[in-house]
Figure (cartoon, rainbow, N blue to C red):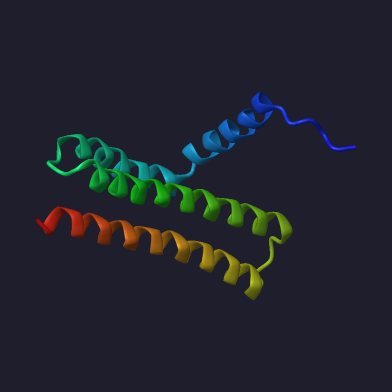
Length: 115
């Protein structure tokens, strides 16, 4: 029998995940840069579409970092020994974070310097 959906229970899982992410050093460093950038959007003379795209590009970094952390946790659960597939999974997840950083930088550069 399938369990009933419980909004509050499922939300508690999400907040538990966020709490874990807030303890992760990489996530903390990203927040250190992303929060001021998000705040700076209020003071930039750009239209709402540009600001939304720029904010979204920063949120994508946090989402990608969350998925990277999840991949690393699962790999660590499965094996504590070095394996080329474990390394590949972690490296690809890390590359996704890097690509999200690159796309955010491109979006910010385009919007800030193309008037």
